[in-house]
Length: 355
Image 1: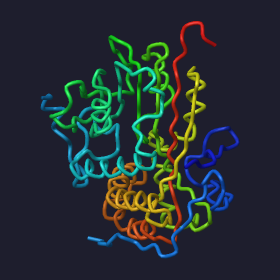
Image 2 (image 1 turned 45 degrees about the vertical axis):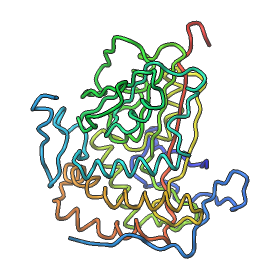
Image 3 (image 1 turned 180 degrees about the vertical axis):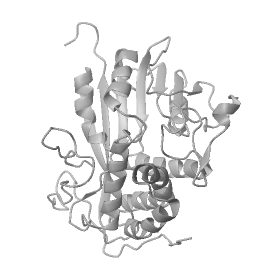
């Protein structure tokens, strides 16, 4: 289902405001029977399902540093703020399931079936699930996937290759690609436009497609049940601000379409999807997606907060965990009808001489 979400506001200098101050939390409510199905009807009998509890590489690449009781990537240590341990890998699988279901179980939206790609590149692949699925979907293609952490499975389709790379640096591939992809990469780069979109444009073969499936970490609400001064809204504001301070923004999704067009892509398309933060929705599919998202948030809140809030705000791990108690309650409160938007954008590199 599509969403008419608003982009982040700008200050007097034309720069996006990094937090939620000034952000329009409440949007015009569409009738439940509206043709575009833009309104998610809440379930008055929704209940929380979360139980609260306040208690082949070089050795250097595999020697993951430990902090806050978690492990982090060793290659380019510190450039990515979130863990890479088994708990985080389980959370990533849960998140990927929620987002994929929200997108109608589609792996891609670009018209790849018309001209199946022979070379695919997945940037910041994480656990590699998407790359592996694409390898199965396109057995005649070579799927190359990169990440800072070597946390992908060892047994994969023969046409899938994983590499430890820093994609923010210049790409030096000997061949071009037919399709390049990113998914849920918030906090990975200083500039999605110059470090990723521009390099994707240069690395694609003419006629090749670039696709971004990105979630904005800006909570939305259509009925005012998410209060701007709530623990959940405050946490998101601090999370966004911490990303801006660290030059790793989390709110690039709403800007993707304009980024594509500035870089030079043609046939640029955009789809938007809503992901409820818990099982508050009446629709059974959205309710299940929300429950997955609730588990994802509850599993990830500590990981999302510890390193960024410690580095940017100077808070101790104990202070951070205490501050998350009320946030966890809000995440699982079905009376708060909050959701996150997913922006899916895809565009084609023009052929020579094409306008």
